[in-house]
Length: 137
Image 1 (tube, rainbow, N blue to C red):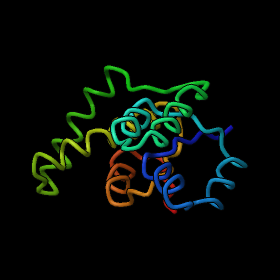
Image 2: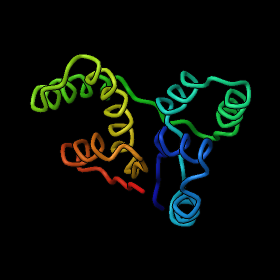
Image 3: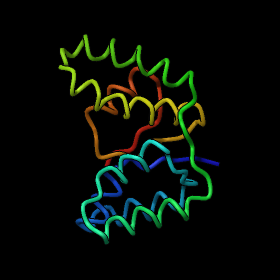
């Protein structure tokens, strides 16, 4: 059985612009999708309309299983953010943003899951660093 985590940008692109229908159909055929607590939090943080809020709350209610980072993932994320951020010359805001991506990637690695993301740049770095599966539309 193959597992997948959909990243925030995939949900937003699908909901707001109708993107990724074919990709999502293929994902449903080849993977069991699990929800990331980090992604659900990012979605909730970003809602700006009552309709979007209902959609995100519905996704949360329907999520049978939510994967969340463990303490060890947070610990390793700090090291990843520092190392990659130093190597890439990132400022503090980029490092904060990257932390959530690192937590998603570490959670995926722990479960042997592939991350489906529109964030090619950050997840390419994480794929290389953590040897995780990444699919980008």
